[in-house]
Length: 124
Image 1 (cartoon, helix red, strand yellow):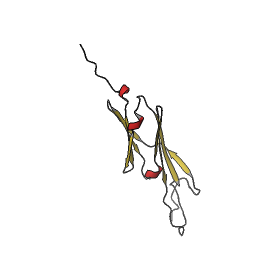
Image 2 (cartoon, one colour):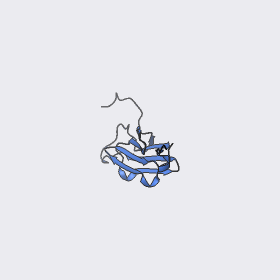
Image 3 (cartoon, rainbow, N blue to C red):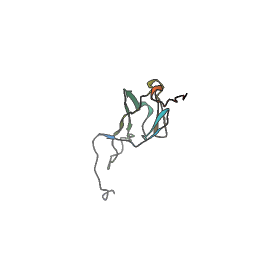
Image 4 (tube, rainbow, N blue to C red):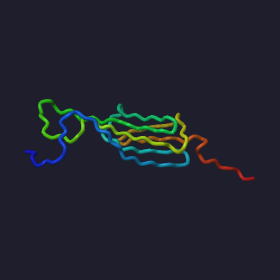
């Protein structure tokens, strides 16, 4: 039935790491990252900041098909880990970081520290 399908056959449980696409926006006060991670459950998402290093990861697990079916072709990995690491240029107020996950997109908002924000200097 599927004798014309070409590609790699995946018959073992395996794990694949993917660098998800990201959009980064910046204002004077904050940096916003929008990371595409479709199919990831909120319980597997992780956002960590240590110094100026920001790490984002999450795991998408393949749905289990009823055991009565025999797999004849598998291209999807059993688990896919989305992982990105960023080196931040600006100091971030670590107590004001927020993250929101909706429709497969993780939005991380990093508020710049007061020292990193532009300061208006009064001219006398």
